[in-house]
Amino acid sequence: MTADDFEKLLRRQPLRPAPGDWRGEILAASRSAMAPHEAVADPAPWIARLRDWLWPNPVAWGALAACWLATLVLNQLAQPSPSERARAERDASLAAAYYAAVRDPAALTLLADPRPREAAPASRRPRPGVGQSDGQFLLSPV
Amino acid sequence: MVPEAELSRLYDAHAGALFGYLLNLTRSEADTRDLLQELFCRLARRPELTAGVRDERAFLLCMAHNAAVDHARRRDARQRRNDTLAAAAVGLFAPAGDPDEAAFRRELEAALAELPVEQRAVVHLKLWEGLTFDAIADALDIPLNTAASRYRYGLDKLRTRLRPLYDEIR
Image 1 (cartoon, chains in turn green, purple):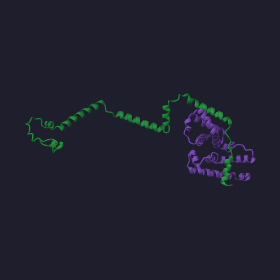
Image 2 (cartoon, one colour):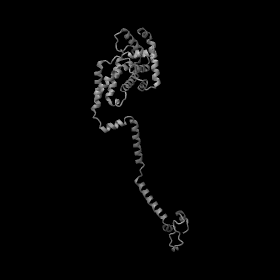
Image 3 (tube, chains in turn brown, yellow):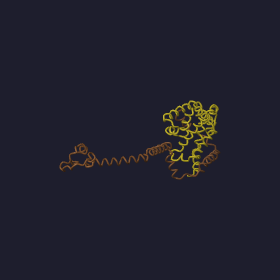
Image 4 (tube, chains in turn yellow, red):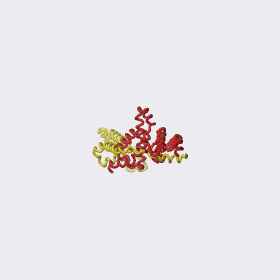
């Protein structure tokens, strides 16, 4: 016997069909299994769509949502307290005042030597920004 | 689509094939009925399972296979009793009018019962469901080569077992 003939012979053997009375019983049992599911109000269409969309990997989506929540919580915890914020604002205004003073040579002169002096001739007074940077100006003699 | 009408359609279209496959795997009509009912109850509870499925028959056979495997794992305590049942005739094939045909079908059923269930599943899906090895590999979640080799080994055993009878009735 060839393999082909043997396979054909086997394929020709018809399988017994399912008992006829099973159909009604199994479908009735299926309907009763369906009943509790249908008794619950159908979810809104957007919920159903969301569920269908998330279904393939619900655990992965849940983990991602947990990560976002953790990030949000950590972000809230990292916010400065009102006293810290007030101190930071005070420091910022001091820094701004210092920066303004550094940019103004007259104010810097006044800070370095607050004694009243005679006004120097205009031709001898160094001019800021001409051949000198701010740093050089700070180090030059008054 | 009405789920109830859809269930009836699925039953009419596939219950025969699922019955044959489950009966061949479990070798018990009672277990086959339980598993078939379990499968349709599952489909009733979750009608979306078959939505978008390309090959409905292959998908349902895969569900039936998984249900049969789970069932086999659950019944460990009854294993010894079922092993003896496995050799008993369960009427897998339709009755034949011709005595030679009837004898061949009885022997074929007994020969199938002697195959390991993995080979029996592949042989059944290939011979009586006409699935390709690709589809069988997908349905049983095994490599393609494994599906092909299980079929070859199973068929060789059936041929060896049935050769005398085959030569006689030919």
